[in-house]
Image 1 (cartoon, rainbow, N blue to C red):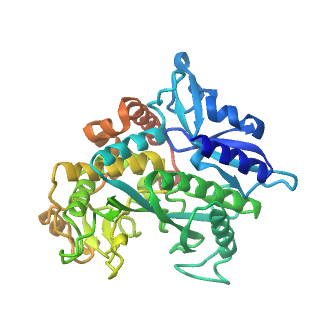
Image 2 (tube, rainbow, N blue to C red):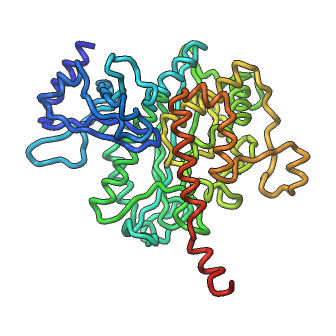
Image 3 (cartoon, rainbow, N blue to C red):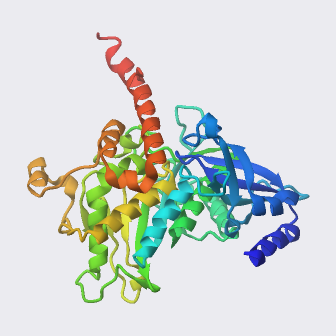
Length: 443
């Protein structure tokens, strides 16, 4: 640790870093930051930086507000954005501690670390990859104004934002964050960046960094980027498909050469756990009222609790095995959206999968064909159920979830549901433009 600290301090000098941003998130996944001078970095690493936790959503009450942000120096990176010609800035993710230097139970990053330790006890390491979808608009002022009319994989002249994606990828790569690809998505003005799989904690950090860079680079070029799940009626929404695998002793625990689909028993149990517990974890993976405007049939978003090989209409997709690439064997969970808190989302997805392994859940058969094209009776006869249809329904299911309570801990479990109930109550009392347009003149 001493060598690593000295290495970070050396990088600060070599890169002429004058300010360091200490990052963490609240329970909803909003990035929080405190800036310190480079001269204060050594003390911050040794002692942490104190702050008022009562001002952070879902953190401490006013009478227990003292918190300490302790830098995780393995996450130190110089930021290629916002550079001054005279100096640079850097960022470090932090773990939140109580004054006695014990982990704070309301820190989302700690919740993920705690869940990863549970996986480690089972001799597993968790790896994740993420596909982040988002929109570019001409401004942040509603209604949304499209930047382009391109479609899936379109290039210029329709995809005028290709340069923005390229700049974002270059910036990510300069920070050591690998992106597999980027492209125009199905909806007009919709785009996607795929982050290459890595360990789950690093991937959650990478998602937070990527979302900030996408927005910052867009603003520098006079446009606005949003990860809102469903900003445009009648068009596809923004998803964040999460590719997941478990490794044991540097071997992919999801791969079995003898199985016809090359899926191990562990993989099938993990799939079963995700399917079984997905309704109760949806309040975390899809935490906003707007999230459920995306989770409707017909727009490539999953609704039904099914899994399949290759098929993209199911909640879980298993990409086709490529000979010689057993390390790439994985499951793709397609319901989360990029407006979630990735630390909590990863924690509950991993916990659901591990629950399937621990309790030897039996995976249902994979679904053949397009589940959207089945009749309601066919789905009922096949035992196919659905994700929650609204935030309210997701909250009610989550309230009775032992898995969610155990994974998030009592503090975040209580605070998150309390916060989500407030949003639902605000939303349900609104008079929308839809109601005014349809009813005002005729009632």
